[in-house]
Length: 107
View 1: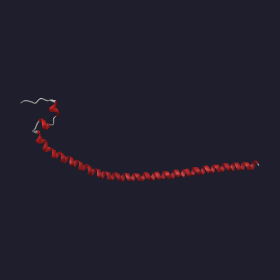
View 2: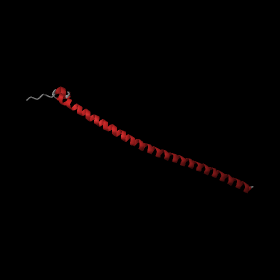
View 3: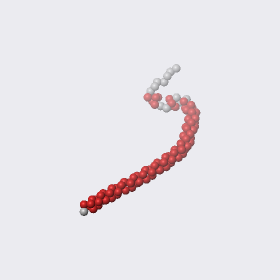
View 4: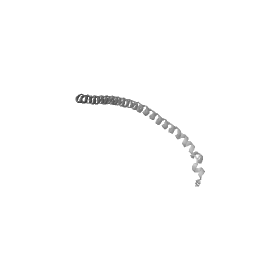
């Protein structure tokens, strides 16, 4: 029994080119491979739709909570700014009252 020598052409060649009898085996397995690939794609599509629906609902819930928290922070910031402004006005009023008292006392 003789063995064919390996050459760069035989190594890079497709199995059908090296051994024509392989062709019938590959043709028989191709439909099975295609069928398996289609099943995998269909399963992935089904899972993706289910996960996407759940993810969308979770994202909406998180967005609503984040928006509510942002609104609350905005309200707190506005309240703090109003308090700061009222404190500044109060301090100015007190300074004016002290000046008026000092002016009335020394005159």
